[in-house]
Image (cartoon, rainbow, N blue to C red; front, top):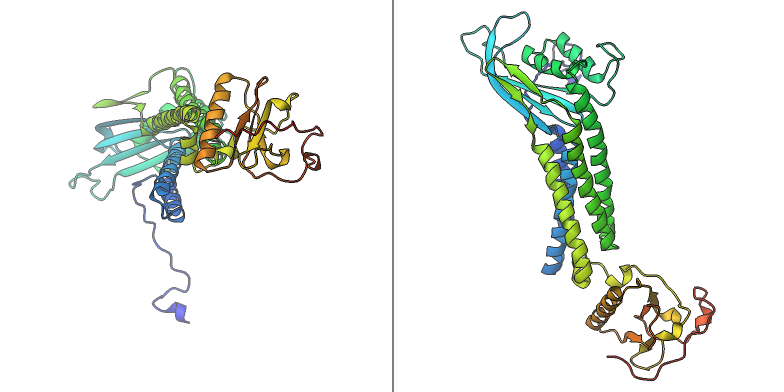
Length: 412
């Protein structure tokens, strides 16, 4: 048959194992690639002929995707703490060969990663060896029983498996500090506990970021709140890692030095993302307070359709009426929407100024009309033409009469 061409054996070809050193974290690369794909897709689909709209849309998408990928990289990143040393060290058990290598440690929320790199002397017995190791040991999430049996923790079981496979001695030496759980050697237990609580907080920040994106297309103020909560959760993850990780500093001695861990890129990435989220949240809330029209215009949302409004009739509805500019007659209740605002003079003045500006900018022919005796504080906003249908025909409105029309003097 045609599939036998070039083959001598009568079975599928079996290739030898080709082990290569790790050059990049596949999970981190996947998150970055997914963020790039999403960004490019949004850029292409949201392109419009108007330059201003493009700038607003692209800036929103870029910042949002950037925050999302930073949260995921902080959650799954392997460099919350790092340490490194270059020293002379034994290579493997049962061999008296010494190597001058560089060994490093990277501690994440779910695992610890140990690397060993060395340039082999061509005149030594290891001239055919490639010393470039990258071993990862997970501790998610049970501590397990004491020892290395089937009921022990995952970290202990992977350590015993590495011993059987003949992993170099420097890597096993470092891992013993995390595997031993007794007396003053409880580094693995404390790091596992800190990673558990920190990763829960990071997972809490992710849905808050999703909710913020949803609210930014409806009620921008709520989106600012959610973004602020996401930032606080990330700061809390940093604080938990700082406090719970270990009461004693981790120092692993070697012949020419010692490994001392410091906070790594993943830790500072989480802290930076939390700072960005909190800063943007504060800015959004301030802009929503002082410049609501510009803020809602930036997010591409209609201000009058997304304000915190409720349809309401006061016990004294004659205090507030809507006057149509063309007929100087009151608008019927079913042809407008009524907005209830908080009982504070600041909100009343702010809402009145905001509504008039928006209506003037859109050339509407209906405006706000305030009659005397304004207590309690309710305002009504209208954006439709008057109708001939009576208010009682609308089942959504209370069965009470509308107030009598005011004198024909329209506010312009």
